[in-house]
Image (cartoon, rainbow, N blue to C red):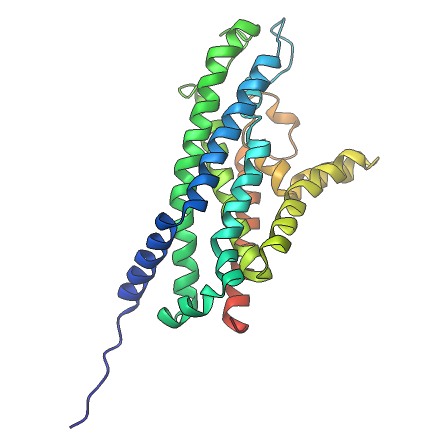
Amino acid sequence: MSVTARVAPPRCLLGQALHAEWTKFRTVAGPSWLLAGVVALTVAVGAAAAAAAWCPSATCGIDPAKVSFTGIYPGQAVAAVAGVLAIGNEYSTGMVKLSLTAMPRRLAWFFAKAAVLAGPVLIASALAVAGSALAGRLILPGHGFTPAHGYASLTAGADLRAAVGAVLYLTLVALLSLGLAAAVRDSAAAIGLVLGVLYLFPLAAAVVSNPTLARHLDQIGPLPAGLDAQATIGLDSLPLTPWQGLGAVALWTAGALLLGALALTFRDA
């Protein structure tokens, strides 16, 4: 009498992978501390920037939303580290071999890890952006950013779009980092690569003398493109519209995840 092995359907395997990755995520202290760091650093830097900003006239040309969300600039580095370590720790400890033995479908394991990372990062990003917007709303009006000049708010149309863009940007940065870490398989190298991808383009655009080339660098770099999504004034002068900028970051993230998936599929663990 022959016995036929039952193979779990893809949905069941994906559910098992999600459950396993969520168990890992919530039982390790590191990710929670990093996400708390994203919130604390983003809000603290945003509040400090709001306290230092002044708008003496309605034509001061300072974007109150960008002032409030200044903390996104350093906060994204912490989100990037969280994304790298989400998979980099598996390779550094050798845990990846055990994970892939328990879940032979590598792509299911990889995208389950991406989904489990995205949820908490999205929540942390929302808290960071909400805290920054609240700090801006409390501080900026006393520095000349009256309702006539505009100030950060989670209810105004442009400011709401800027806040949503900032939340999505931080989440995309974490997923981009996860994809690059899966491809590189070394946490230190992946962190250096991610930070280079984020900060190299704006640095290069600042030093080149050709304005056309500088504009193109701002259009293709994930950091300047993502920051365009947080703008509420001077939109006509931006290299990309806010949603185009966020779309550029999404393309970078999709490319990084694809690269990581291909490396995971065609290379030994």
